[in-house]
Length: 124
Image (cartoon, rainbow, N blue to C red; front, side, top):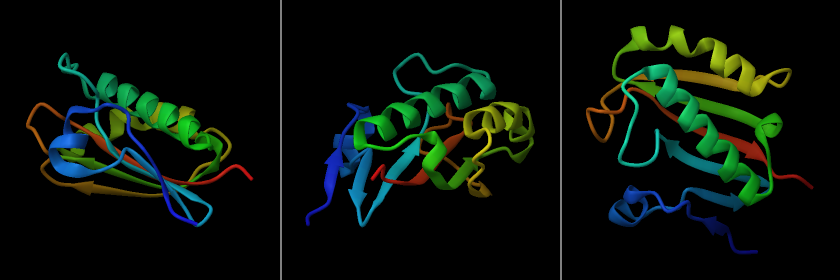
């Protein structure tokens, strides 16, 4: 079976050449997500909420949901920005916390303060 690929219409998808989500081997792999659009919020928690919403929509489009996320990677240029996001992350994953890693690194554009990628189980 060939992988199924889904796009969200994000500006970088066509520029860089990637899919927002790929379904393969019983998993949904969601590419790193930042706050979408041209009007990116300044606040890291607002950017985090927007990225989580994009992830939620991408998972639903591909046949999964937030409760089936098994792995998450958080990428932030400023590690001090991570703690303010914790309540949002805890709420997003609820009673189903995934394995997680936080990496401090530069992102594709300086306006972004957080990027989040996930791997989830496909709904059977």
